[in-house]
Length: 135
Length: 137
Image (cartoon, rainbow over all chains, first blue to last red; front, top):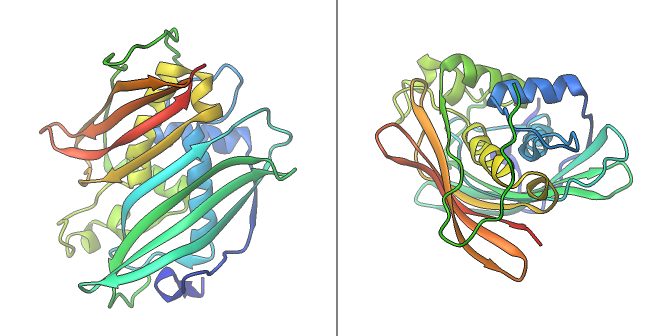
C-alpha cells in the first residue's frame, strides 16, 4: 500500500474495485456484526455493501493514524441481483482543515455488473493534520 | 438462527424493536478482518492506549450495522430496497460495552416512513444518532 488517505486531494477518484459477493463473505460479514435478521429475498445485509465500498478504498489508501469516522450517509437500492459481482467506486468529495484536524468526505457507490446502483453514500472522517504515520 | 419479526404497519410515535449486543475485542477483530480495516485504533491495544481514547474502540460501521439490523427486523425487504440512513458517530463503543440500538417512528409522509435511530452504551451514553427512512407504500 503506497499512499495514505491523508495524501489525497479533493477530487481524487479511487480505482474501481470489483468484488464477488460470495455467500461465504456474506456469512463472514453476518457473523462479524452478529446480524440475525433475514431478508426473504436472500439479499445481503444492506450495510455489508457499505463495508465493501470502504474496503475498496482501504485497499488503495491507508487510514492515517488516529482517523475517526465522524458521520455516514447511505442509501440502499438492493433489487434483484443480476450476478454475484459488484463494483465499488469512491471519490474524495471534499477536504478541509481546521484547528489541526483534516475533515474529509468520501463519496461511495456500489453497482452491480450492469451498472445498476445498489448503494451510494458519503463517509466523513477526520484525522490529525500532522498525521504522518500509516499503520 | 436468523430472525425476522412479522413486519407490521407502524404509526408515528411507535417504538421499533430493540437490538442489544455486547462488544468484545474478538468481535472488533472479526469486523476488522472482514472489512480489511485494520486501523490500530480498533485492533492494537498498545497503540490505542496512546490515543485520547485510552484503548481500542469498535469500528463505527460495526456499531451502525446494529441499526441496520433493527431496520431490517422492523421493516423487512423495503429497508434493503429503499433505505436511507444519515447518522453521526457521537461516542466510542469499546470492547466490553453493551450496545443497544433503538428507534421510533417520527413521521409517515407521502409513502415514506422516517424514524429517529440511535445506539447507546450501558451507561446511556449516545454512540450514534440520526435518522433512517424508507419507502413503505
